[in-house]
Amino acid sequence: MQRLPVTCLLTHAYCCEIPAFASDARCLLRVISLLDGLTEEKEAAALIPATLTTLSRYARFQFEREERVMVAFDYCGLEAHRAEHRGLLALLSRKRSRSPRTSALAYARKLHDELLAWFRHHTLLQHVALFSEIDDLEKAERIARLGAADCLIDLAATAVPRAASPPRKVPAEERIAAHA
Image (cartoon, rainbow, N blue to C red):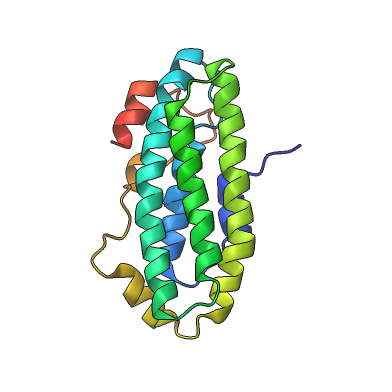
């Protein structure tokens, strides 16, 4: 199976006219992408728990934001949407409390694919349904941003340079520090 780049997923599967939600999607995908393309066992072993912890924290922030908008718009699918949020948080908690039974590299690949599958499913089912019922995008944006930063993760610090030469190998410690 061919893997789609993270930017492809965001561009094609998460077309959202609410900037706060689009920002959240970019952050969530950026965290998940930390598990992609790892080549060293030690690096994977260090990044797995850091990624799961960061993802858990960010997901809570993002889900609170989404649910605040759903409540404000009296969204009829709130409980089903919220159940998927709770399901991901429970999955992340289980993954954080267990040690992988395979190599860290294999586990990182599996975890990356599992998290992207959840993102695709959630976006294409729950978010498409939600966005079809939001009739005031400016109001949704204002509600989403109440008392919150634009994004909890500085994307500039984690941006991958686009160059003709292969990207520089970034040690695990630097990748983790960029997201701390």
